[in-house]
Image 1: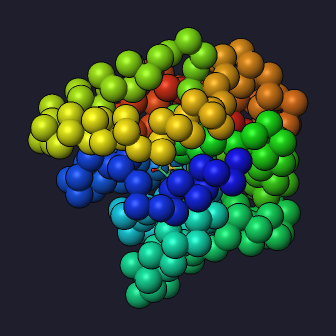
Image 2 (image 1 turned 45 degrees about the vertical axis):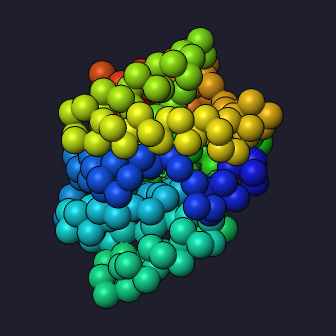
Length: 230
Ligand SMILES: C[S@@+](CC[C@H](N)C(=O)[O-])C[C@H]1O[C@@H](n2cnc3c(N)ncnc32)[C@H](O)[C@@H]1O
């Protein structure tokens, strides 16, 4: 769904302020570090976004491939991490061209909701091919059906309260309501999966998957799956 990639390449209002953006990426990086299997692991963060704390993940692994489809975001992460020899910023097409069995860990967090059925199926096929037999694919922030936008609103406010950006979070919700995010959310939509539906999709793609008790990041109404190739 190109419209969502263009949205993330625009000056959007998803992050309430610099502090929200900062703590979001710190939480995500810290959770990803928990999945890194070894200090020489090859890790792919697929549609990584701004990835402000990718340095933390790189410190824990051998090589970190940051894949991002939005060209402006990708240029920023390439510049930010140009001095870190463990990190490369690449396109999704570059990931699709990687050799079989070349990754120990692939993470795709908060992306499945923006993908068409064809896009997610193609990505899962690529991940299955790229993973070493001992590798792991972690799929995070999967939206479930029947959880309304109100839950997302309350979750952001709770996050803002806990991490010191409550007023900015409230203001950003008003801004976001009048932004093209809501137009896109209602016109293009967000993909949602039941736990059983996603497990079936992952199984069809050649993974044995288990839902984790806690989602990556701050939104506990969403799902994370740890998937191993079978
Ligand atoms: C909410 S951000 C998540 C970024 C990061 N993974 C995180 O957890 O903060 C969504 C990301 O998905 C990317 N994206 C949007 N639509 C996509 C699509 N159809 N296929 C692949 N990536 C997409 C955007 O460019 C953006 O980087």
